[in-house]
Image (cartoon, rainbow, N blue to C red; front, side, top):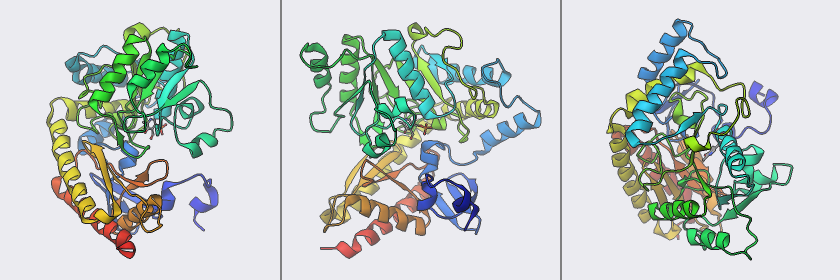
Length: 423
Ligand code: PLP
């Protein structure tokens, strides 16, 4: 028995799908300790948008460590923090005319979400937060209360309260007019909400995509009813859908934005909650935590913003590769039209959804596909409440050649998963 099995809790999950010991990584590739290499279309669940150990970030990190830069600083002023904030302002906020204050809420995505929920309630003096079917916002209790997945909710151990789930775009009845109607109707039973929290593309929820039109209508309802709009861009931000923020194409400006995962650019823990200046009502220390000043994450985060977001080359590459990926997935779906595969996505996030075929559940087919892809050297995870969607998150820096290699492996895995069921 390995030390992993001996010591680690049963709660571990990804190591079950990919039971090898990884050791080195570079760009789009992960290597295990036995010398096998894997094309990584999982990218740390979206924490490695620029691939593994990008040299430009590694150099900045090594320099910082070599000169004994401050590694940990809570929220004390440091040079690394200054560089990060300056880079955020100059490369992201100012060019987009966005006026946000930055809260460093603790290092994970759920920290960014908890801060957003807490602040929205504090500002509005209301408690209810609207979320959507199939949403995922994290594993802490506040974040779970606005997440859809029944199994994850059940693990909370306490009632999850002060939230109401409404249908997302594409779900039965999923129109922002419903929210408008419920808020306006004194008989609806809905308390006036503090906020709406939404993902523009539901990564964990099965790669469900909200249209720009739907997002604009939602933003409009929020504005009219003075309900705060929180966009959780933890997984879809930092260029995953093309632009830096996933809501840019819709032309909306959320009141609060949650970022984490790829914001450090290197897989180091860092999260931000961006808030409109008028919402900055917390007293000093009213919301805090220990890990709000991880120097190495500031350093790689600043270097990533400068290297990848000073121009729009990366955004263009993501859109171009995204179209190539979507076309290839459509082709795979067309090859197996008896299986009624669905293709969803935007930019470089894509989902291949499996329906039940010949009595085999979609979740089982997606899991088989992911396992077969792994054996052939490709990491892809499954998502959705029933696990029936194979989710692809290639690095945004993937080359066209690597993208084609990954697609070929996936096509072979899908064919092998469906072969026993061929009509
Ligand atoms: N929000 C979204 C949209 C996510 O996809 C995730 C994680 O997958 C989270 C929040 C939670 O982030 P973390 O796991 O870092 O707490």
